[in-house]
Image (cartoon, rainbow, N blue to C red; front, side):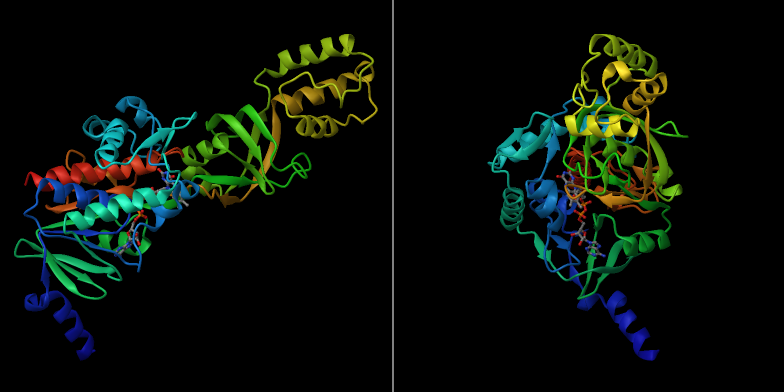
Amino acid sequence: MIQLIHVLSTSLKNIDMQKEYDVIVVGGGAAGFFTAINIAQQRTDLKIAILERGKDVLQKVKVSGGGRCNVTHACFDPKELTQYYPRGKKELLGPFHQFCCGDTFEWFDQRGIELKIEEDGRVFPITDSSQTIIDCFQGEVMKSNIDVLTNQALIDFEKEDGKWLVSAKGESFTSDFLVIAAGSSPKLWKMIKSKGHTIINPVPSLFTFNIKDDRLTDIPGVVAQDVEIKVLGTNLESSGPLLITHWGLSAPSILKLSAWGARSLADKNYKFDISVNFIGLTNDDCLSQLKELKQDMAKNLVVKYNQFDVPKRLWRKLVEAAHITETTRWADLTKNQLESLSSQLTQAVFKVDGKSAFKEEFVTAGGIDLKEINFKRFESKVHKNLFFAGEVLNIDAVTGGFNFQNAWTGGYLVAKAISES
Ligand SMILES: Cc1cc2nc3c(=O)[nH]c(=O)nc-3n(C[C@H](O)[C@H](O)[C@H](O)COP(=O)(O)OP(=O)(O)OC[C@H]3O[C@@H](n4cnc5c(N)ncnc54)[C@H](O)[C@@H]3O)c2cc1C
């Protein structure tokens, strides 16, 4: 016990043993690096350190976007951009007016990194390699003399005589400004909570749906291009491409639902029903078209004659689910079979039982309550000179480069606030 008290008091109180910095940034990820570099380039007089828990920095950047790093999105209107954020939509409007996706292009361009826009609006380095972004950040940090201290997990911080006393696993430090950019870390959220902030319970976002259903077995890789999906019993709905996987359903239409429904689907323990409209017609319109086909295509086999924009293998499954055999001709379809096929095409119900990670990108919904942040500076309203950026806040977006954009925008505004102090 006496030993423990001794360790604690030396780690937090013995100023002689502490390294002094003007700014300490906790977290060597996207938001941490962007913040530190932007401060250093506006204020060369400030001594800055990044404390990173792990032995390597920028690990998420490395694996991001399937190793290509989807740095931002080609969306240049702040208001429109906010629509991609289930959490943070309102709060990010002002910040996006200060630093938006176009500024991200310019920032990287000024550092010799060329970005390209893909058809769906996602933006990647022209090299298609996240290493390009890592090399850029590492180079900027070296140029700016920022200390990057690895294996230095933050274990406590407190204010004393106007300075932050920062205790890490390896050493302790003092600083005038403290920036926490530690991503989604339950340990850190607990620590931040103990300092007076509210933490919104974290739950996963951007996941795929697990579904065991005969209609989906043996056809992984099939994509329906433009579907409409509803989560039954809620007002959650989305549209877009749908991918059938070995485990269930994925692709943008599902990821959007997982993001907007992150909290309500967690409450349902990821067990719920969805209704899928594969063709975008109402059930009545579909039924009328099927009746016409019954007349016009009387002699054709139903399973072979697919009049709709539904992939062949999926069509075969839906026909089977409507209890129509391989040898049934259009003319032979009963009223029940027509109704059943129409229902499969326009309101097919699937039972979701669990979720899986989407390997390209996943984030956490939850974190520091946005009510407690001054979004002009990304500063805590509870403690002066304490700043937050990135996923540590209760901000997250759908897939497409928006999560990094939040990290860049937050980092930029923290840097501006500290540089002007
Ligand atoms: C597989 C995957 C792919 C993704 N791809 C994309 C993409 O292409 N585009 C996109 O926009 N978003 C993507 N995302 C989301 C994006 O990576 C995050 O939103 C973003 O990294 C958040 O940045 P951050 O700096 O807030 O947190 P992080 O990048 O998570 O960085 C936080 C850092 O803090 C450190 N840390 C934690 N606790 C402590 C502590 N106590 N002391 C010191 N350091 C600590 C962590 O080790 C980490 O290095 C992806 C996510 C994943 C998981």
